[in-house]
Amino acid sequence: MILVGLALVAIGVADLCAGGLGGEIASGRKAVAATVIALVGASIGLWVTSTADAPAAAALLATVLIASFAWSVLRLPRFRANRPGLAIIALVAPLGILAASSGSLKAAPSVPAMSWLASLPFPAIGEIGMERFCLTVGAAIALMATANGIVRAVLASAGTLEQSQNRLRGGRLIGAMERLMIFGLALAGEPTAAALIISAKSILRFPEISRTAQREDDHPSQEENSDNRSPTQPPAVDAVTEYYLLGSLSSWMLALAPIILLRN
Image (cartoon, rainbow, N blue to C red; front, side, top):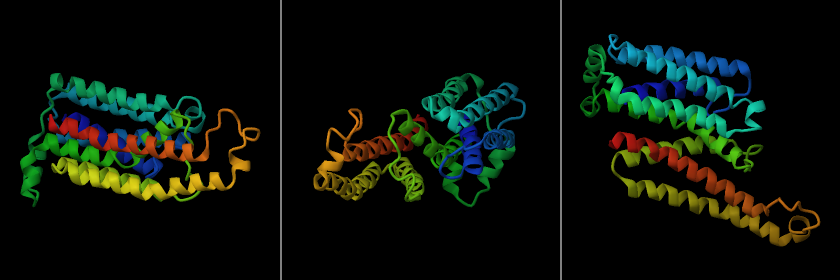
């Protein structure tokens, strides 16, 4: 799985540099920049693996090139408006193929990389091995901008509008911090503490949903009148609830997905 970790590092750093923490790619130049940054990062990451393993190096570079370019281009506004779910497939499919073929590639860490890991002033990190180290770092970086982009694509695929896109922008930072905390606690073997974070977020979100429902009760003529509302338009409280549930569940699944690879 060392190749998967390096690919996640390259794509995650590229998303942070080209699209910011929100994971937004607004122009073709940013899409090209993200691809170039990802390729440069993957090339540098080859220092971690044995230079004699040419198939592994080729598989890593090909995966990063295909995944980063397709993931970035399909998030451009003109593509995202039609089929935003394609961007997620374009990102996940190459990484999945790389993970499935990692056993046959048998990429081994290089001697300089192992020496560097052993020289770190944190003995616990040196004991986990280069493979788990790369996968952990890659997952942590990908849980920031890349994960925010995935959550936005999931919401767009479901037709759920982002309720706060023109108001507070802190949700993107909160989402990244939340995923990193859940990932870290689950990795440390503290699932109960991770569940407390999920419960706390649900409690904090409850007043917002309650206020939306109260506004609908106070102004039924404007929001609940069937003559004024489209048949396909849901009540505001349902839209807020759907946005919260879909976004939160997607975010939590992304935070817990790397644990499966690390446990195996």
